[in-house]
Structures are given as C-alpha cells and as structure tokens.
Amino acid sequence: MSCGGKEEKKKEGFSVEREKTTTEKPAENVPTANATPASERIDLSNKGVGPITSISLGSEIDQAMAKKGEEVYNQMCMACHRVGKKFIGPAPNNILERRSPEWVMNMILNPEAMVKEDPLAIDLLAEFNSAPMANQGLTEEQARSVLEFFRTLK
Image (cartoon, rainbow, N blue to C red):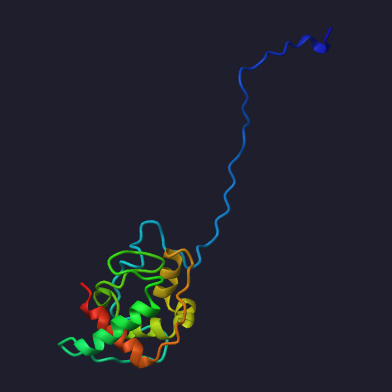
C-alpha cells in the first residue's frame, strides 16, 4: 500500500514547463531586417576611405577610357561581379546613382580599409556573406577606367 493514501493520475503526453531566458547582444555592423539592403542604399555624400578625395566626371563618357575599363573589369572583376545581377559581390549597374565616384574608386583601390572603416562597405560585407572584395592591385588609372566603364552600364 502507499503512504498517505495519495492517488497518482497518469497524464497523457509529455510536457516541460520552462521559463524563457533572453540574452540580447548588440548587433555589430549587421543591418536590421527592415533596413534597405546596403547594395540598394543610396549614399552619394560618402567618399569612403582611401587615396581618392575628389574626382570630376565629364558630362560625356570617355569611350576610349570606358573600353579600357571594360577590359580591366572583364579580366579582374568578373570573377565576383556580374553586370545586371548580384553574384559574389554587387552588380555594378547604375552604381554611380547610389555611390559617389570617390567611394567607388576607394573601394576598388583600398578594399581592406574600406571593409574595416567605412560603414557602407561594412554593411555590404555583411550582405554578401562576409566575402571581402579582393584587392586586385589596380593602379589609379585602371580604377578610373573601370569607373568610366561603370558609367556606361544602365
């Protein structure tokens, strides 16, 4: 027999009552879920981090420079960037509608410092699965020709 005459009833199923614990960590350089993706964000005032502080673009595209830039782009950039679509990195189409020419040049010439110090580059790094842009060792002249090629992409 049992002590105290208590009768135990069997419960159907199994359940565990737990209290929810929350630990919140501050997000480090991660865009919020409702924020516009960095690749679509418009910031024409940011010049980035690097050697380029000012660029003057002519009203007309320099076709010879753009052709050289296309050659450099096809050789050095296409492994990660595709015209018209996101790939390993963002598409270059209409980039100058979203970024200053100085920012684009500094990203090409100084990607290591950009992804460490520039807030927009940091957000792009997060958006593109932490795949940092490789420094291709381009000269300022080559980077400027790539920028001119980007002006032809709509």
